[in-house]
Amino acid sequence: MAEVKSKILIVEDDLDIAEMLNAYFRVQGYEVFTVNWGEDGVRAAQTVLPNLIILDIRLPDIDGFEVARRVREDRRTNEIPIIFLTEKRDRSDILQGLEVGADDYITKPFDVQELRLRVRNSLKRVSQASLTNPVSGLPEGALVDEKLSDVVHKSGLSLLHISIANLQVFREAYGFVASDDVLRAISLMISNALKETGSADDFLGHISPSDFVVVLSPETRVAFQEKINSRLQQSLDYFYPLNDREQASKSMNRLAIRVSEVPAVFGKYSSVEQLKKELLSRSQ
Image (cartoon, rainbow, N blue to C red; front, side):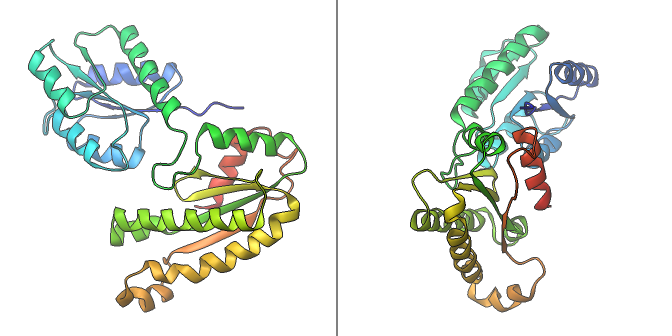
């Protein structure tokens, strides 16, 4: 199975250092994003959602401490490990970095091999911890990949793809708390429907925050699919404030649930990543 590249965001105003780190970590097999200003670093963290941030403390606009503070305040990014780059081994910098949630720091001029090891170790700690979605509590990451591997390489299993369309639009209109409530409620409804119609061996997990996969037996698939279609579609209007429901029901960008069977998975895909890529392309 092809390995998914970890994403590193580098926030560094020294263009020579930024270019060197970009090239070095790309050669190491990472997907690298580089910005040179603190405000750009905050925005990039929220849009790229990197697996790790390498963050210079001295930046031309806001400093690295403020960048880290904002990253830690945002639910989407508050668990991303941050490695600070500091000009000198200044105790006050170290203490301030720890106060805003830095995971590690390294002093300039730094040994790039040491930085590589610190990056590797930070990512390893995160990968061992992130096996469930923080909002829904459902499996994600390696747990889902393991189950999808069974579907790709074994016969006799059915696969359903369930996606929440326009969740981002809803989030922009009503905020993160409301969109998290939507995700949590829909996850619970899917879980309950699976318990009612399926068996103990059935599986539900995330391949993205708004995309689910359900692995179940062919015998229970139809009953589950019918139940989940009717149950979810009827509930969507209630996520909107009462005054907005009529307008939302006519909008092209309203919340919607798409439930589709993925036929003939066994023998069709060479890897789990190929399967996930096709599923996520359907949600675009």
